[in-house]
Length: 273
Image (cartoon, rainbow, N blue to C red):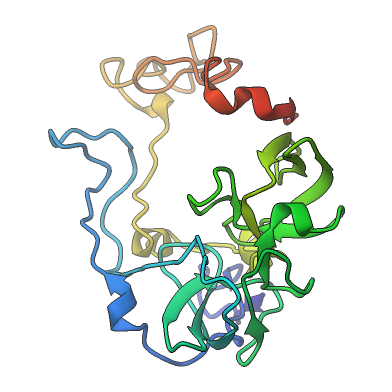
């Protein structure tokens, strides 16, 4: 982590991730596109997600979560920052000349060789069938549905651990502590996602949140009764409702939100705590 001299009150505790590993290059134009910013609004213009809006301009990097160029070696050209995700990304070039962005693993460096195969060497960054990965190995960018692309463990520092292989399914221990099964025909990348210290970042000042597109959050108790279930009263009033609620009045604490009929519910062996 990078710290700063306390030249101002906001600088005193501010920290950022040391980006010494990042290559000093512009993103590849053919692998970037501009996304429409909706500021948390739906197609009717109504706010459905609060506290979003503004922020610096940014381009979306097209990440290859599938990596299905089998048995073609690739070289890591650059390690780059991605404004749309917490982990770093790597630009790779295959032997056939094709370039792609992939999620960078924690110890990946420029010049590293990686490969996707049904059975590949147990080297960080390599991608292979989950069935062929030894028990106890840390993996990321794991496919739930074979061929769909990685859906599990894609944020900074995330990884899952392989616990067992049995009857077409592999048992994984998730970052949350949940234990679930996935089909062992899917692919997974060896190692942990880069930028593991991202969660230790101290924003330091309100303006930095605005750069990220995060708008201020107002306490419900500071609002009027018409605006929030906690609103109204004089001074520091109590909540006034039995259970914690959102501004819309929906219960937000002590209530399970997962759909009981969700198809993947049968694959969960042990719930997270």
